[in-house]
Image (tube, rainbow, N blue to C red):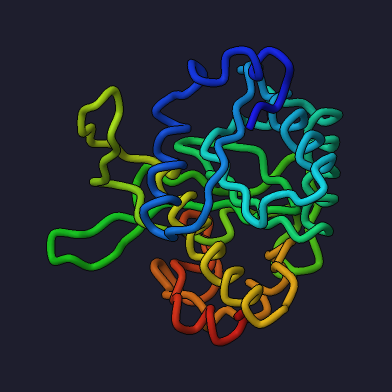
Length: 245
């Protein structure tokens, strides 16, 4: 799906490894229909263009996985607020947006779960990944669902982010990053949405309040409760389906 007129003319050539892994992981994990949102704009403004385009759709996707990110310093407050408001509007329409927390830093928008990263230790225990970014926003204030912090804290949740692979240019390539963790969590949400729709329930939309109100849905990685590397922890699908399904 083209997000701008230029992308519409050249959509087949706009794929990147970042986009590839979003599609590959969501398709393989869910077995559900997946759309690739192509945008020819390589700047941070593409987040806003994409969100506004999806808002114009009569039936937007129920989940949006975004592996790209940028530091708040480079985004600036006006654009960050515009993106935040557009994401809020998508959430109100039933779209759950998952964004990578970044491998070093990314803006902490209030209306989407930021996804941090974990890795497996030598004895096969899940631990925090060294690359996983986290901390506190310098733009966004504390949302109500995060009662223990002064500013918007991220990430919110996490998934495996090291020792993974994708197919790129017809070859298998190893990789690390929260870009892998994001479509993994997005796939979990998509499967839960599919269960909800079978029961004639609406899609989940804005997730964060439900996540923080039901911390039992996650496996703690670093410490009990939230931490600035893995958030609330990694998804416990069985518990998530019980609570959110």
